[in-house]
Length: 284
Image 1: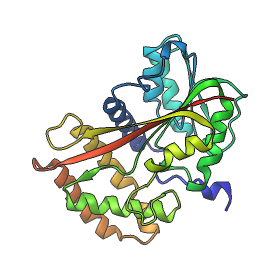
Image 2: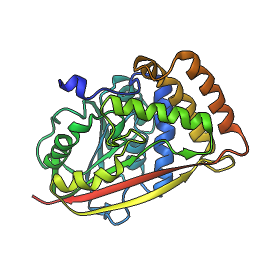
Image 3: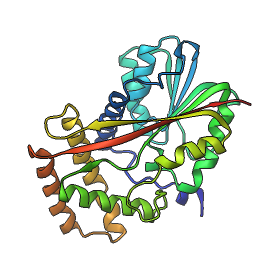
Image 4: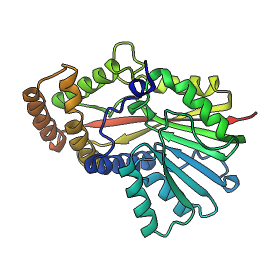
């Protein structure tokens, strides 16, 4: 299988709606984890940070704003995402922040021992399951001895009491299974969180730690509106893939989409998303 086929993106990468969705998703994850970095990492010693698949750059810009002593680099395959990130960073006058167009699934062009931290979120959404070991090896290569790899993933967009919402989620999980992104043998969810510690260990990381977090996006919860906007876009953008794979017809998806939106806006809607952050120290 070619690299192009092994690293197919489930969502369109050059889409304004996807950009807005990623900003909402990223900010919600940061709030749930109550910080930009794991709390046991001494950020005063961190000088150079790489954010892989940075998207529209909401995480990198917050890091650059809060930690002016750091130089932050964000990379993403999408020229549209990078263009937006550069523009917003310029408006904020963040001179300690740079962006580059690059495919995270390919070898990185940075020299060895360049960064103190490599951060990567939600790679399961675009990375073929067989590519994880080689990508992690690249992270290790560009990290200085004593630096850290930080991975953040969720196994699905959350669990809810909405029938249409859950049906669409299962369609999406099956799509990830068929496109060989998922690690779950039945495609019930992404199955990525149990793999993170293993991947870090296989890459040679030490002192591996994992911590789980919960974001509540039930009706009335603080994250409800953000997640509603997130899923309003995601459930629409994934439709072409679901139809292409024969998982549903456009008529079925339209009906489920409308029902799902109604469910999420109901006062009785209940939902949680579970996020795992795993990190390890690199010694060479």
